[in-house]
Image (cartoon, rainbow, N blue to C red; front, side, top):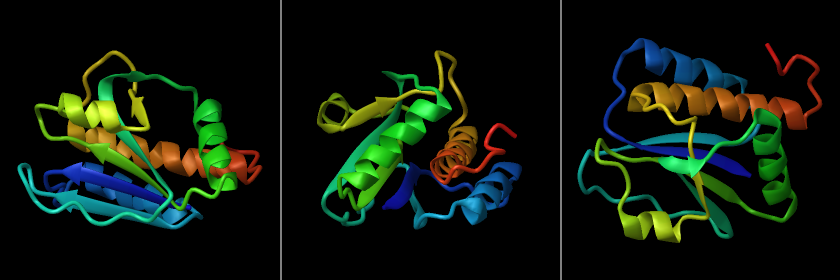
Length: 139
């Protein structure tokens, strides 16, 4: 299953970009990171069946193990792509939230979007490590 981060805005050369790249290299599943302009821009076609997960402050919080279990179920059910969408500064529209398969939050605090990308990449690596039975997923 392809793990695909779609994020509004450019990460450029930054410490957060280095973190995203570091974790992306560790993920042993197909992985893609797509940047979109702040406004507009064509969202790439997705593989079907797929799941769309919006990072949203009103979303569900999950433990790393529960997140891994969810990805594992989707993979085992034949889902070909899990799209994790990080919106622009104003977040997602009500329509986008209503159509999403999951709203996911990293807790009640507000996080900078660049940090959210790095945190998401790390959690994707951690989830795939958990599913692979790697004993060091807590590091």
